[in-house]
Length: 85
Image 1 (spheres, rainbow, N blue to C red):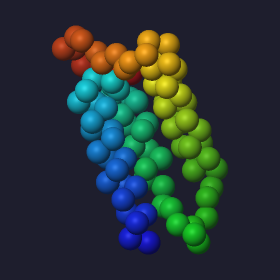
Image 2: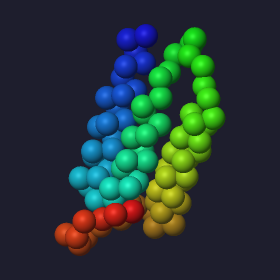
Image 3: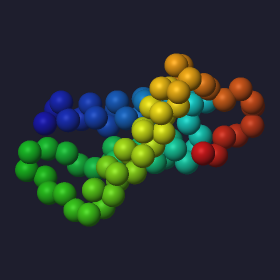
């Protein structure tokens, strides 16, 4: 059970890092954090919202993966404006 706690800290660090690197905007950062709020473990049950959260996480990370695949490197935002998406 102690190892599962690392999921919450890891997701928070990943989201903050991607936002500060200007890879993600506010919306994608919050969407990345949403599945990290799910309780995990051997005896936990999953509902439909957990499935939806996992699907949304898949979409957000797939967009980033396709971007890296096409360009060969991540492209952080170069402007100083607040990125929404």
